[in-house]
Image (cartoon, rainbow, N blue to C red; front, side):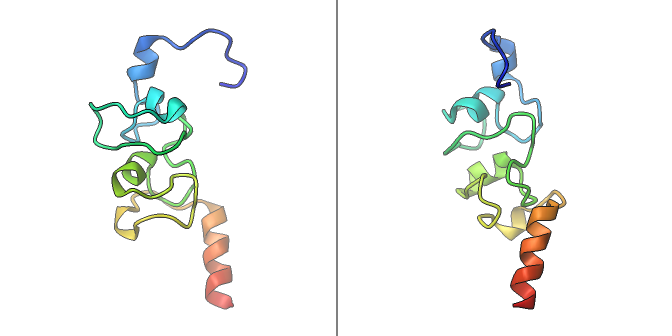
Length: 97
């Protein structure tokens, strides 16, 4: 997306390419679309359903009011994806300390 030189179409903006519950436009601008249940508080990656790899989709983090860019900010009950390796390493360190 960083090398994109043409403005995205209205169809792309209203789509949800990563199926996380936020439109591509919500993820790239951080501006709420009232047709989705979540209200984003920041920009996220529209091609990655879980931008911080904590196991909670960006859309669920918007609903929960947690930070989709902070792997330590999530509601455990909302975890529907397998957390990324980074979160697993942090959990191991926290348990062994």
